[in-house]
Amino acid sequence: MRRIEFYNREKETMELARILSTDPTLVTFIYGPINSGKTELITNLIKTLPKSQKVFYINLRGRFISNYDEFIKVLFDVEHEARYERIKEFLKPVVNVLPESYSGIPIPKDLFLKLFKEKEVEDAFVYIETVIRAFYKDDYPPVLVIDELQVIGDLKVDDLLIYKLFNFFVRLTKELHLAHVFVASSDSLFIEQVYSEAMLEGRCRYLLVDDFDCGTTMDFLDEYGFTDVEKEVAWDYCGGKPIYLVELINTEENRKEKAEEMLGIRIGQIEGLIEDAREFGYKLSYGEERIVLDDAHILKSLEEFRDLDYIKASELSKSVKLGLIKANILFLDSVKQIIKPQSRLDLLAIREVIADA
Image (cartoon, rainbow, N blue to C red):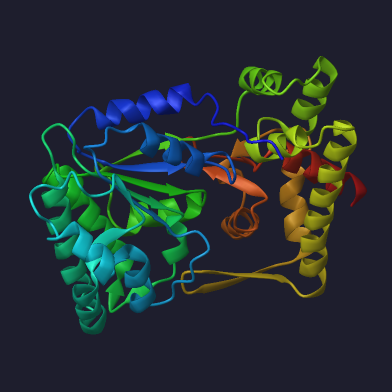
């Protein structure tokens, strides 16, 4: 399988560069449909930063977090004894010997165990602030990245942890100008929840990482020798969804057949959800509320996309909106307040499903 290089996020990269060229003032939400390239953008950003600018990158993808203990484990990169000895003295003023990027906030094992035992989230935040102060250099504030933050959406510890966490982020950015904080998520409903619960008005900004537009898609596929016919097939079926385009790139024979296979799979997945809703009800939770959707609810909502690529967010009921976004069929752009299918493939699948209903 060939290696697919990071490709042409010039607009988003320039915006990140602009943010990083100024003092930290706002928390930045990096949002977009699933598999649109948010993590790739962040990874590329980390690679291009000066070595003197330290990065703390915490990816919550695939982590099960249901309580404080698990949250603390994910938040920190425990410095085990051998590595700790090599560094000689943790948080020593000469920090150039330390790695440019960490998979969490570095911490000596004994201190980590103390925090873990006492379970004081405020103590954890004080420690993180201390570390960031030690790594701060003129013109190069540290960068803190939390990827897939929605994983902690239901986590509560004696008070709403999200509120405490984001108020800490506001302290690092707007109050102290100590670190750039980026939070990435494809769950725009969760971002709206965070914005409301953490009272972030005037304290955050949004950066959309969407699927490629048509021109970028064509140029991208040119890099991998697609014919004009193959490029047309790719756009018609997959739009600019990077992960689907990569599937076609790695399928060197009969790419139209592969695209049709991908569409068939997506149709089956959506039909399966509707069938489950018909027989058992599609169940989901939102805060303290328990929501149950039947197949009629879902089909009526999908009908909105028979002739439209997107609709206003207000045109769907709250319950259906929650259900279809949580199922990764629809995407809410919380800035533009529009709802659209997660991809071109999803749009085609939706239209096939409602045509057969």
